[in-house]
Amino acid sequence: MTKFNELCNSYRLSREKYFNYRNECIDFADKLVGNMIGYFQWPKEQIKYVSPKGNDSDSVYTLRGVLSLEDDTFWHFGLGLTLYESPDIKPYETAIIHILLKKDCEHFIVKIKNFKDEFEIFKDKPEDFENFFEFIFNKIKEDYEKDFEIFFEQEDTTIRKIGFK
Image (tube, rainbow, N blue to C red; front, side):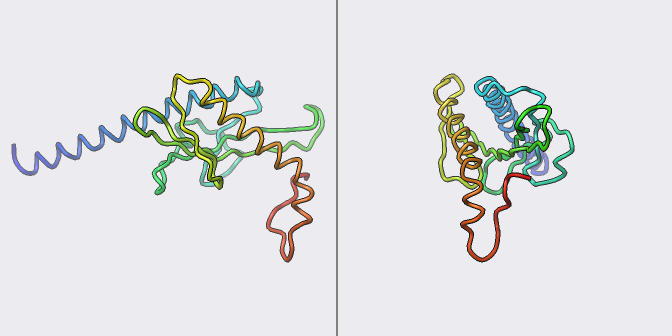
């Protein structure tokens, strides 16, 4: 085997490792979202994948299409949940959950962007998923319950938009 062929083989093996890792993470992310939809009993038509890069939120994406490996070594993707007072009353609002995940040995580390809390989730442990889901639920609920107060507590400039449009 020539030196060139050895380098080509190393390149091939490197790509193979990357794609195997990516596929494991995609499978886990798919399971995470499926379990989340079931746990929260979210209507599937109220859920959409959103690019973590903040691209056009009206576009329709697949999980594979939005999953992005970033410099922090986590895979990022956005999950949008459309909320409303009542299905027949507008406005609707899409709460975006920016999820980060990566595989670490036999489990996955999962977190929400801009929060320090990290969750170790083993694929076959429902309680690991539930701890993460409760964290998400509490953060979204807290955000809406305190939204109005947070808006008025800001001092000089309004950095947070009020959640009721």
